[in-house]
Image (cartoon, rainbow, N blue to C red; front, side):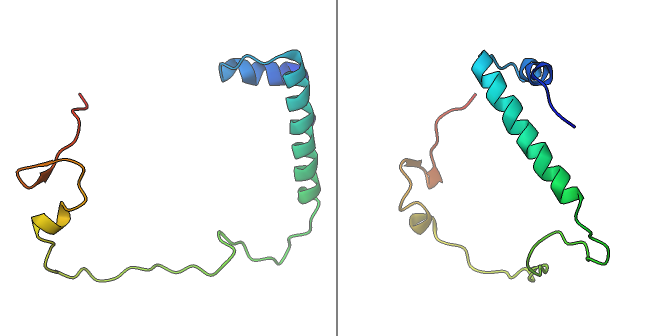
Length: 94
């Protein structure tokens, strides 16, 4: 499968991108190089290879919840840039 300039123009239109003629040519060549690489990967024989989702063994690192004493407000607010009545003060967002 090869990508032509018309397809790059279509994708640019969908993404609301304005590309110059030179950029369209560059992206067309880059996309074709990527597709050629993927086609090479499809040639590999993967029979008998176990499917993986991660390159290293992965296990669930859950732990039991533990009730602990929380920090006192004075310690929690030591590095706060702005505070009021033992609370963090932040700019109004609405």
